[in-house]
Image (tube, rainbow, N blue to C red; front, top):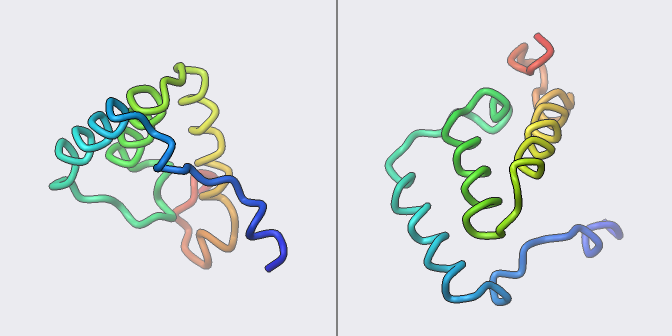
Length: 92
């Protein structure tokens, strides 16, 4: 529990009006789409589009950041605490 305060999170109060508008547009574009379960994020095209658009359109990051998040997503989905006993991870 002591590590929780050290986990970096996005402070939405620091976003500009333009960034908020971009986030709202992304939400409006994707809010009717269905997401796969979180342990299948590595193969969920909607989650990947959401990540890509938030990184590039809201945060102004480049494609390298999108690719790095893809690596992190695959690693996260391979974690036993995420995949549990399901054989749905990227390594299966």
